[in-house]
Length: 234
Image (cartoon, rainbow, N blue to C red; front, top):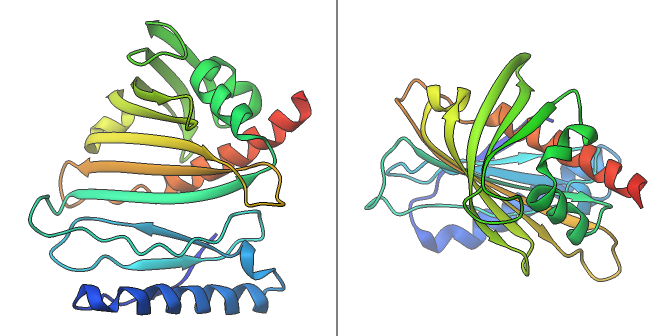
């Protein structure tokens, strides 16, 4: 998946609708040129908090990523230039209940769904499915074996969402804070499965650290693997 264009920052909020419309048109034309339905085009955004508009990156994929034109921006009053936010959606055939249940109650089974990416998840403290539980992931990212110790900060079983706060591990060598939220959204009427909505919020240790673009791709592929596995479990 590669970025095919970016929209320049516009000077004020009055241009927001123009950005959204332009993004939708470009993504639709790109999908058509590649022989894909327009609704399978897909937009992701990174939103570092600078004293300017962040770039809106438009991507296309041959997979079932949902189309989402969402220009994100932040006010310049409250945050550091090192703060970023990245959101993306992936449509899968598993139900919202299946997808949420795996992350909330069975994270120690995630490695069964994508063993080349995740090798295990160990329970350190607490109970799966409850806020405050401490877990430690073993995974492979960018060709390297890594670990991530996390606290489940929030769980909303009704809205099928869960939030992981990073405590220790390889990511903390580059980021001061890193929070991952995952929500399983119901599909559009007439569609099956669900839309997995991911939000990564982070603060880099210094300006030499990049935004977690490869981690975004890691989570996209992991979500697709998990969706395919959950359908087989039925």
